[in-house]
Image (cartoon, rainbow, N blue to C red; front, side, top):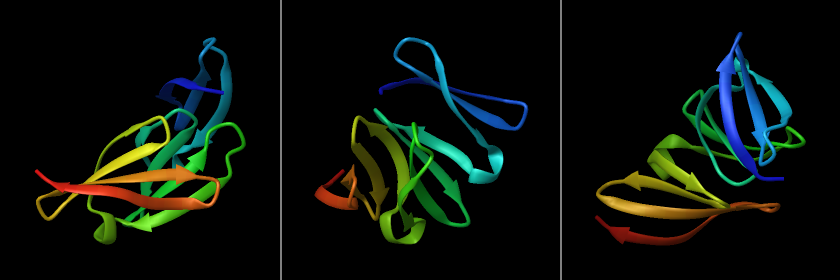
Length: 105
């Protein structure tokens, strides 16, 4: 499944697939939606970024905002953060979140 859109209404996040069908809803208690990739939602709550599978709602992993920096964007299975003048790219997979590269701005 590929996420095509996420909309917020009535205190819920509605996730839509590539065919425009609603596939899952999440309550705003999950946190603030920071972004989404191909099939992963990134929520920010309590100084953590949480990576959640859109279709199942299962949490893949979470990382502390202080350790990874400020969320920039997600694309497919990659998530990009900015910290201390550097850009860090992380891969989100079934085994969690791991850094794959970094560079100076």
